[in-house]
Image (cartoon, rainbow, N blue to C red; front, side, top):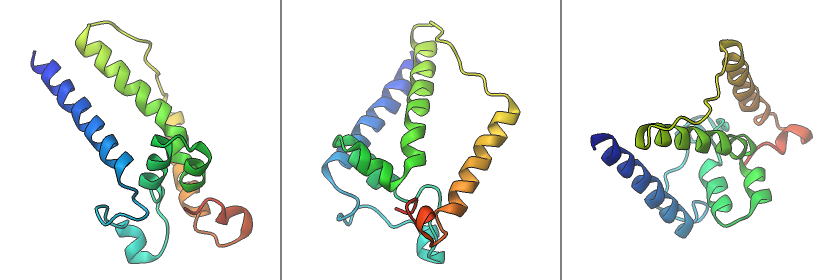
Length: 132
């Protein structure tokens, strides 16, 4: 029972955050704080543009979302699957296939994130497209 209440709380928080993000555009709203890394350094972190990208996804604008933060958009299916797998395991004791990532693949993902971070801050044409 305690596990079900915890999951209900997590899903309620996700739905409430999604509704708030759907209603208020991070590009023009005063509710959302600016990225502290960008504010301090003037550089984009791997997460810069994620809120605006999520807002665009909630409104069905996939191309706009990809333009703001392609790495975040590509990670959403994996995050959703892991949330569903965790929920199904704890609620119904029914196992969905888990995706096992060997350590080398985890290091490769970290390398992709770091490369994305560096490349989106290069002010030349092919790389400036990655900036939000």
